[in-house]
Length: 208
Ligand code: AMP
Image 1 (cartoon, rainbow, N blue to C red):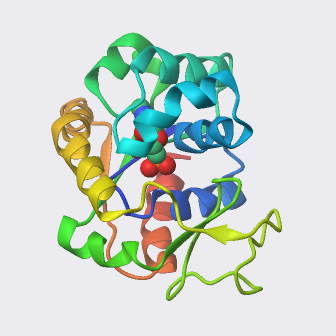
Image 2 (image 1 turned 60 degrees about the horizontal axis):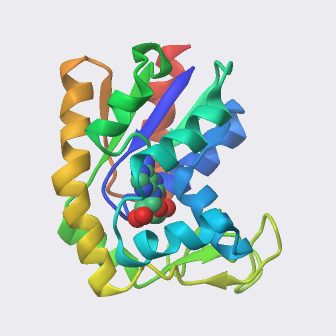
């Protein structure tokens, strides 16, 4: 199965993805996490992309497509989290068979804004938590890799606003494109992490 997970910032993509990986053993392809990891390690690529992430802008398409294409080459069972996010990423990927199902987590901007205050992520930038609805087993520590939980550096009001703008301008068009191609399943992303996940799980189970 080749699945794409899309939705506005804060819609719960990372939280849904973690559960999908647990239950369906997808290869996880998450450009946001890969880019943050590069930034953390201060690699040449990390330094190059820091300005884009810091401003809530999309990283240039050739960089992201390069990362993704390398990871999915020859693979048939993967979950793309937050990719493709603009029409030129679809064009550059240029292979309609690389996507079989798109899950769109639908939620209003107003509802999602309230989630941001409690949002946390592990220091590796990979695992998501929330101070009210998704707590780690040990306060302030990631269940998976034992690193400290932090706020994402791009979770500030100004950067969140910019990320929403990018979403409306670029990603909404991608969602419409997949709707026209009849590959889109729209899932209501309101509710607890488990409620949302059960809705997504149903869609994936129907694909098997
Ligand atoms: P995310 O963790 O998915 O919210 O992504 C965090 C940041 O990584 C975004 O605000 C972008 O700067 C960058 N990013 C993630 N996915 C993509 C993508 N498909 N295309 C370009 N930039 C991306």
